[in-house]
Length: 196
Length: 268
Image 1 (cartoon, chains in turn cyan, red):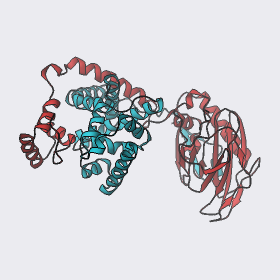
Image 2: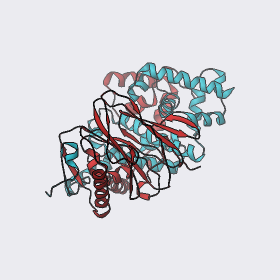
Image 3: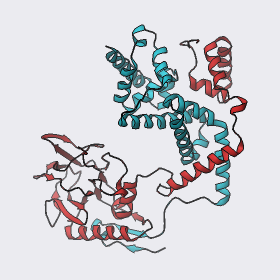
């Protein structure tokens, strides 16, 4: 390995070396690559419909959902070791799919495009028991989505689209139930404010 | 359409049930619930793939090929652990390997986007730091500069340093090939700060020009000569421009203290 002492190193009272070898992520061997490809095929056959359904329900657009599905599987590959270790791949995929779709929604928001899918709108209406909430207008919801922080958006999706109880959302987000409860209260207050 | 009840399992639980991921007890509970709840049974039925929707192996193989191409393409600019790096971070790592890990070198970057290599998003990046507070003056208002802030030409930056121990400090700017000392302004040597002494630097720096600008903050127990820093920065930049491969750095001893600020010109 070629090594050279950087001219500035004595300045810091530390010895610093560099080598000129390439350090980009190593491509696996041919066998490992074949094995990885086989695993992707298996995962795709097993989870494709679940991921696709979820992307479509959050994004409401088949073309955008296709891109998101691909992104989800790239993300799985990037974290394949964590994915293999996870006791619940479905939960893992829920989380990653939600994040990727919400990223896309934020991009749409910046471009001033439509954010609310029929399913999410339906979830926001049907899961609320009081009449006032059901009367929340689509336009108001769009504005709400535009203003929300990432965690609140996740909570909104998990609560209103996936009908998750607060404990389940808290576990999924790795936060406390109290935090989820507080954010949900704020969300409901915002919904009320939008309505009025 | 049947409405879900408050006691209904979430979609996640139904999906986990369908994939056989749940523990036996939960599996039984949901099975019993499904027998009693048309809404959830309907959801499960809708989620069950029909025969004509089943994927054939060729489709999955095509998809896998595509996903793997994407993965390897991104891996080329990623960490070994698979975490994707922004092009900016990758460029800086190539350009300034010393400062990426060097002992007692704290960095802050201010970047005006002017080069495609730095075109990786509009946000300010803050990395490391803690001892330095940067005040940002924009159109008469002053605020503490933080991540995702956008700064513009004509804005002023003022530095406040709070060192944990007695040390020498130098902040320099790199814009194009021009390297300037910001703290002390146009100084030839670092300034000395006492332990626990919070010091607001006397002058502000007015940001100008539309080129990428990077600010580096250096601290050391010994005085730092501006000319040596300038020489090292120039060499790092030349090396990054000429060497196609990434320079890998090994270091030992000393502490790492980094601060990056990435800034983008306001587009208004």
